[in-house]
Amino acid sequence: MKFFKYLLYALILLLVILMLLVIYCHFAAKKSEGNIKLSGIYGPVSIQRDQYGIPHIYALKNDQDAFFALGYVHAQDRFWQMEMQRRIEQGTLSEIFGKKALDKDKFL
Image 1 (cartoon, one colour):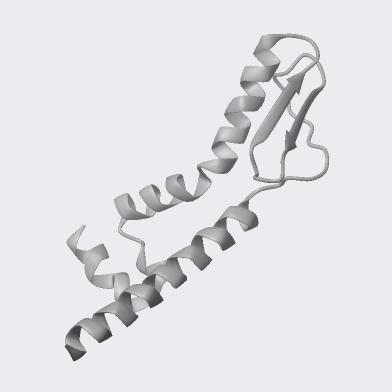
Image 2: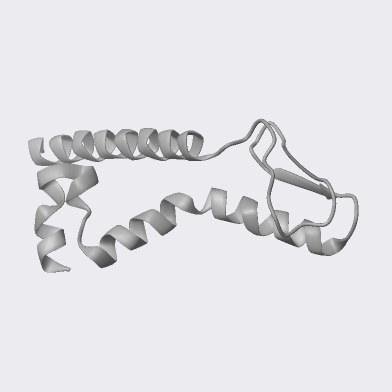
């Protein structure tokens, strides 16, 4: 019975840590305010995120600009996944997670 109690505590702790990590990475990586000048677009593009973080893209000139902005937003939102995949492939997870991930780096 104590085993299940400790297992439950460990799962709750792991879930809380995972949620905090996701929230931190979600807000730390994005530039969601201000202006950015990019080459490759023909007219002004506005990206506004609503209260849930969902992007709304408004391109004034053409659809190509909207698609370009969509790719930019997609890269912002998927940055954490891309970074993790890169680290898994290179075997450098332990640089972020410490000694606990060293065995996985050696295995991969």
